[in-house]
Image (cartoon, rainbow, N blue to C red; front, side, top):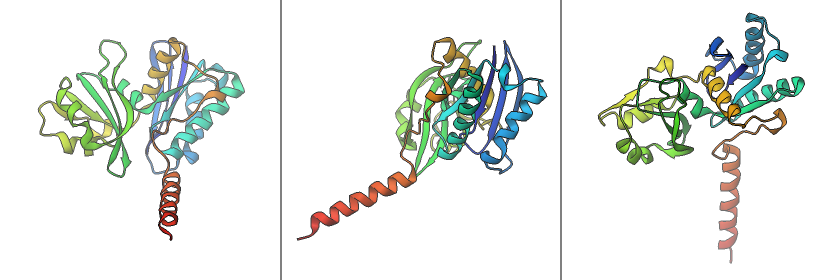
Length: 242
């Protein structure tokens, strides 16, 4: 099987190609360019580097959330188009699970992405060992950082935080024995994790068509939050009128 993975949920853009039992190609870009500028060029460069075309891909994997709403939409749109054109199955992968696939040598992995407003998008997994899949221990969600306290205290150690929200989590829990922070240069999302997660899901019958791909934001967008707040305030104001 040849799987092409795309990670565009955060500040980095990453693409990878996995063939059979090994990584064929991976590239990660964090140069400040928008994903709309760089992602399609990265996909084209990856295919050309390994002498493949989109028709040679057996499975497309893409992060569907959580993460940057714009980044997720760009990645999903790219895969939708490529999968539709070649009638190729694809898999929508949890951004947090993709992070977990890239960490080993510890007991527990908590991928954490900065969700702003004092929250992180987070989940928890047992670290993949000896070729096994990471086992989910906590569902994806948007959590206040201090709400992770009970889990962090009770889970198996060593525990490592990864992702662009790792620092804020580590700073909160660093005094707990066995809590570690993955090196910053290894914490960005890697598309190889998308490939591994996508192939595992496809093996379990969870592949989709491009048309069926949907984002999973786990939180309302800022525009939606502001609209709801405006409507709530307006209703309160109207209710107070004599």
